[in-house]
Amino acid sequence: MILAVVGGKGGVGKSTVALNVGAELDGVVVDADLGMADLPYGPGPDLHDVLAGRADPLEAVRERGGASVDVLPCGRTLAGARAADPTALVDALRRVESHYGAVVVDCPAGMAADAGLPLCAAGRCLLVTTPDGVAVPDALRTRALARVLDAGIERVVLNRARDPPVDRVQRTLGAPVTVVPEHEAVDRARNEGRAVASVAPESVPTERFSELAGALQ
Image (cartoon, rainbow, N blue to C red; front, side, top):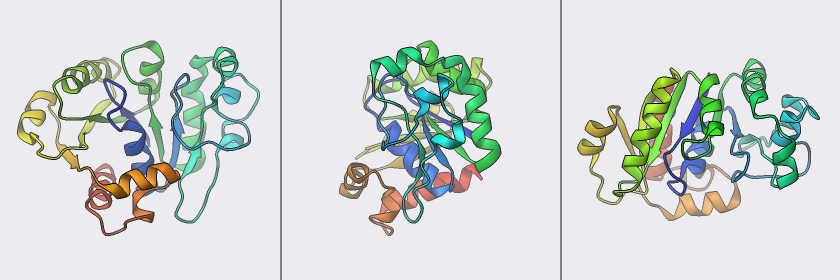
């Protein structure tokens, strides 16, 4: 399975959702935001190197083990982004899928070409938004892009919601909604590059991410 985690705008918590759903699925999370990488990074080859033909995709996966999440990180340099060939992304994702099974792709925000490429490989999508009046219209445009590329929206993740307008968002975006509330454990886990289940296993966000993974399986 290749699952794309998409969002119409930046700042809605897309990377956090990708990291936690990837952990629940026991898969690899791929940071496919070639210009604004946000997932944990460490020494070794990265997605820029893979897309430039300098590294094999499997070589670039950081197998962290234990309570951490396996990640294929993206580089942070402008030179790396310029050397990368985005059209090689689909083959790279499929190679990781063939070895690891579940691949969760943290996609770039917006409607640029590099946001659509992961959707060409993904059979399924999670659409992440917050309940504010700017994020939901942007999410609508991303849903339209996913439909054009035949990547079905499995669920909408209504993130950081205190008083969530679930019915309205579900009617607007046309998919079941899972609410992930604000929680200090989510922030703490993100700062440590870990899944929230390893920080607060009994928390509501952990329960919601587990529900999301169960629905996808």
